[in-house]
Length: 300
Ligand code: BG6
Image (cartoon, rainbow, N blue to C red; front, side, top):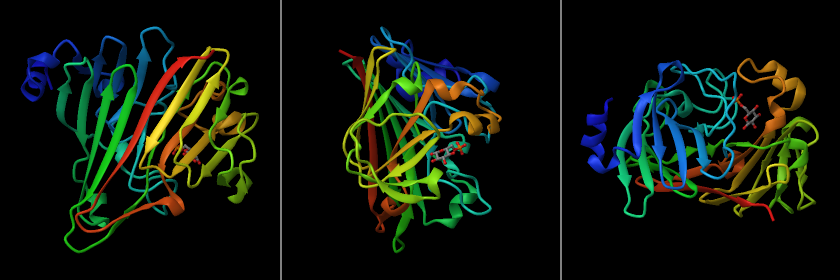
């Protein structure tokens, strides 16, 4: 796609705020620039790999060892997980949405300086296992980053049950120095303890070992406080009942070919979606939207 194609889709006002280019691995990507921030989105997975406010370090972690190749998930940024989360026998972990090249449908530069981009997951052989659906993803860039995953069940008679998750990797200065707030009282499945069901008793979650937890019935805002970067990140969400917290720590990092051995120190995944017992069932013609707004401010 070229600049003139962008103008056709978006109108000439998008040019200058959106640039279409070849990213790593020569994969097509968009660079977005607003008065407050920059962002990068690959069509492969409709994957946001970068968001940075002008006066701050990057918000999203991206591994130096990530693969960039069609049909492979990018390690870092925001993988879009759909229509299932986690392993599924004989099938790709975390669904196929993050492995496909999404269609770019629309740009909407707004008078207030925001830029929104809408993608659609194209039809693919794997989708035949489900009722017909559309999956749209709208990314809005301004002072903050807002992500909307809109799933519509196009079937006339079948229910569509799926899981979704925006598997966001946040950049932190030192994972052992951060605290995560907003999950107190929630029950969670602890994957590193054989999926034992536990309850979060503290409002200050700290990371000092491998963490892989699915918090259920968690609809409120989650906050990351990073004293070393002097930053507070807010994760506000709608249409999401699950929150996954993941850090691979030392041994898992070494096992992952597309992740540096020490990179676990600089990232934390706080993932917003609907997984496991929180999965979504849409009646024929029904639609659901998962919205996540990521913002940041100086930590007082
Ligand atoms: C998390 C899961 O969401 O994703 C972890 O809870 C998993 O169990 C992690 O290891 C990374 O998955 P992947 O497929 O991107 O390596």
